Structures are given as C-alpha cells and as structure tokens.
Image 1: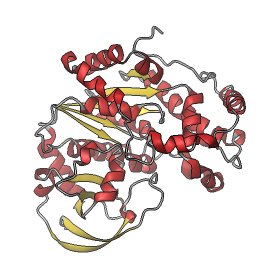
Image 2: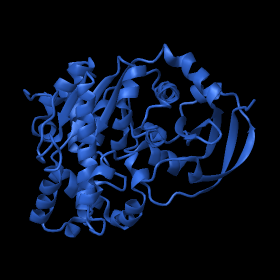
Image 3: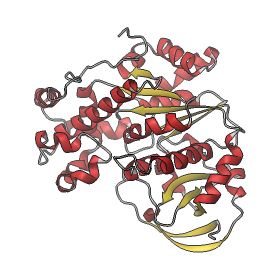
Image 4: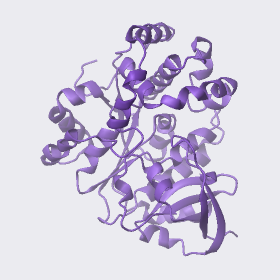
Length: 379
C-alpha cells in the first residue's frame, strides 16, 4: 500500500506559464512519509494536480508569508512559490475529502470563454470575508484532458472531481469559508455536467463577452502563441479534447496566421456551444455578460449575489475591485497587454474572419450572441 509522501523539489521545469499544471513541472526526490491529515490542517498546502500514472493527488506547500489564495491565477502562483510537494494516493485522497465534505459550505463554479472579466468576477467574490475565491486551480483542466468522449470513465472522474473540490475548499488562515467560488480556465466547462452530477446544489455561473473583443484580447495577450499553431494542426485530436469544436472547424482555421484569429474564434465558439448544451440538459445557470458587468457594476453584482445567496450589504465593498487591475502581477496584466497593442492587426480583417467562421455554426452566428439565462436580459 502506498503512503502519503513528501516530494523534495530539485528543479522547476515549466516554460510557458499557460501550460496545464502537472507533476512534470518539477524534478524531485521522494522523501519521508507524512501524516495525510497535515494537508487539511495546513492552510499553506493546496491541491496542484494529479499524478495520473501513479494515481496520486499532488499538493504544493508554499511559504507562510504568501497568501496563495489572493493569486490572479492559482496554478501559476503555486508553481512559482512551491517549496515542496506532497503525494497522496487516491484512496487516502478520497478519504480526506469525505472527512471534510459535510463541513463544506455553498459552492459556485465560474465557467467562462476566457479574456472576458472572469478574473475580475473571481476578485469580486474574494472581497467578502466569508467567501473563499479560487482563480484557476488547474487540476480540473487536467481532468478535462483524460475524460473519454464516450463517457466510459465518467464515474471515476466524478469521484475525483468531488474530492478535488472538497479539498480545495478546506479551511484557510481565515477559518472555514461558508462559500467557495472556484473559477476554472475556459476548458473547465467540459466538466460542468459531471460537477453538477456530484454536487447538484452548486451554483453555476457562466461569464462571456463579445467574440470580437475576446479574440482581440487573445491576440494582444498571447503574443507568442501563434508559434504553437503548427503543433496544434498536427495534433488536432489531442487538442480537440479541450476545444471540442476544433476538429470540426479545423478546415476553416488558418494555422499559419500569426494572429491565430480563427483559432481563437473557435475556442470562444466551442465554450459558447458547450454552454448551450448545458442549458439543454436542464442544469440551472446564471450567465453574465462582461459588457453588462462593467456598464452597471452595482446592479449586476447585486444580481450575482442574489443568485448566490450572498449578503447584498457586501455589494458596495465588492465593487471596489473595479478600481484595480484584476490580473495585476501576472503575465496577463493590463500593463503587459498594453505593451502589445501595436501588434493588433487591422480590426476590419479580424471582424471579417470572425464573422465568416461563426456563420458555420447552426445557432451562434454573431459575435454578440446572447445566451439564455443571461442576468438582466430577457430571452
């Protein structure tokens, strides 16, 4: 039987910060055994990823003077500040989760198309003292990558997902949160049905934005990404796991385009398409448009807090985050993005490419498409 072990970090190996978190991010030596209860008791130990080969959950321990929960992107901060790793066999992992499951408060999962203000929304939640708001724990992206299209491993993944959520929502230095908001990377929406299956009381929030603005933001933000396009073109099946419309729309994508316009459009469209499927399954949702959120913050945040049963008295305080850059300190901060403004090509060309690709979809044929369940919109 495997025991919970300390893994002593020798080197950190990740290159692009946007890669999916995995154990190969570190070179390590296997150390001594550790009491698995330490993971629950120590607020500086957080779930990082899964070791799929050895069926272990991997946690990172970070310095006591760093509030890892304040990070714009949790998985990046975990990697940067990791001092040591702890490997927990699945059996022990599930037992730890079961032991704290009954004490977990209300949970909200935030899904989004990306580059649409979802980090801002995550920061809004973090302003409430009784709320634990986590921005992009990456273990869920990893699970997206191993989900079989035929659903044959859904039961096992559902159990893993539930345990991951419980252990991410464990008590922090501030104590036991009464509400936990978990914002996933855009790919995470592919797990929405499984999360609802195992935790049907979870609040589902979907954040989206006009496709043109999302694509332009991607072009400015992910400047080196176009170099990846030839690799993606040669591995459509693998990337289709994360962008399920990619295989179908690959023939419309120019994989030599230095701006990756059609690729980013397909990413946006794939998430929007998935949200429509979620609604068709009858899963309760609350959709938020970025344009509405920034146009009338107080009204929209009041609606969001009402949906989540959070105190309306906290709305004014939460809205103070609109005065800050929600991604400050990250690779995607407004300052870094502004530096790349000169790299934005002709707006008309972008608009035409987006419009042409969207016409291929049976429903979502405009960049400003409004989904059902959008807060403040009658549809």
